[in-house]
Image 1: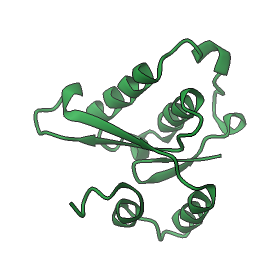
Image 2: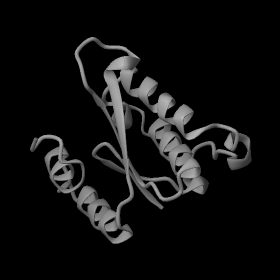
Image 3: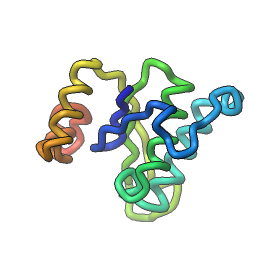
Length: 126
């Protein structure tokens, strides 16, 4: 299963993780709490999804676990003040075919931030 985190398509198949997560162990966490974890992660490093792909994969897996219809999340800085309050999040459900196409483009180096923004997030155009 694919998950778009910011501008990176991740394969979040639990069997491919370095240390697979036990879904039952995290079932008590709320969706808001998981979003907060993502905000903390990106407050520490705006490129966390690229600099620590395993941690990003775990976050994506937790998001999908709590919100099964969601397969895309964007964490972005809204102000220069830094810290957790400066990070916002948005979530989407994308067509699985579109995800597969973007993953194929990513594999051959044709998926970049601008293309993902134009097709999914629509932030730079505003």
